[in-house]
Image 1 (cartoon, rainbow, N blue to C red):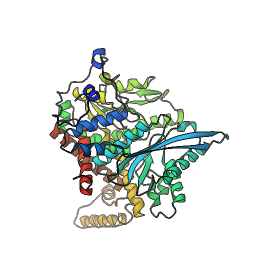
Image 2: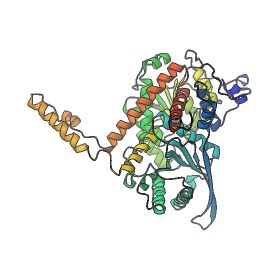
Image 3: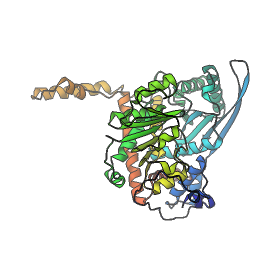
Image 4: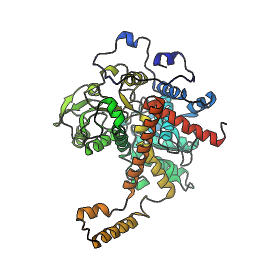
Length: 505
């Protein structure tokens, strides 16, 4: 089923899986009018539905069950006034969507952006449902949004907006450690999560688990070490697993492994920066980086730590000495490279530029960066797309660890770290008594007890590795793209929950 036929008719017929041709990469020509005639770009929500329906066709589950899983269960819209510092009053509109409650609490970020819509939060909440299922995190999917441009407000207004939004959710029982647990997203950060937590605990003082009402908090406010880098590190682990797969790399006529791969990243925010950090650490070269107001290119590799410091100071890449400035950031997406990582916005790879994408591997660090039309075109041309449902799940995975920490009221590693160090020191002593002399550097490597951050990184790595292997196996077995495989995997896991709960036979 292609994009055009989907727009005309949607059904859950048991059609055969698509077969994809040998990988032949795109030319630099723009799509012709004939190729795009009658094909309209889908909205984000329509794209999510499209891929869900493609995966659903591969199952034998009842249509009623599939429709129930697909449907967003509730959307809350709130409107409230705030008094600004200058004395004027502004009306604020905000949303919270709960896509699925097959597992509780529901989970999903809160974004502050002036283009937030109801459809967008519904689409993102659906992605959260399926994403949690793919990585076996026991949450339902949710998403929130406040319709403001956070850059236009100071801390005074942002705090008032955050606390009032939280109070509105509390009144509707739409936030809490057992019901719905928000997290940071675009335009929000750890400080805003701390305001949410403080407001919840002030209005729900009897909730002994109240600190777990939100994740992504500062460590001093009940956050977890390793959360800041979690999504970017998860992106690295996911990419590493795919490009270490010899069969997949042979199809692309590429050498397996991270080392030496040329990478282009769109967006040097938290996710993009940490993805660059870990890819560079293990031997990849970042040859291009794009931001909203321009890009930077350097074939020999960009020092992204220095670039980030320059960006924070100047709010532009222009003038950065470690590369060539490119005024149009869209041009960066079309650079010759091995891996393209869209790490910022939805829909940046679309039908207007899909024929110009030269990267054989597209790794979706953002939510929905490749539109349905572009996905179908690029997949049929042989590009490997590592889907967002897997690749940016590092954030929600470590949020899960933070939530567990909050419920347990104990830092990970507190009961075991010194014991592990003592045990390994004993091993070192035994080795030396038997004539095996270790250097100080070797002793330092051996005598280690895992602290919270090491345990978080280990748990994240295991989660991403297992989920990546599942998707590769499903895609091969069903002869579908890895994105369709991710939705197929999620549908099977969610269906199992509903069946065991007795909701469906």
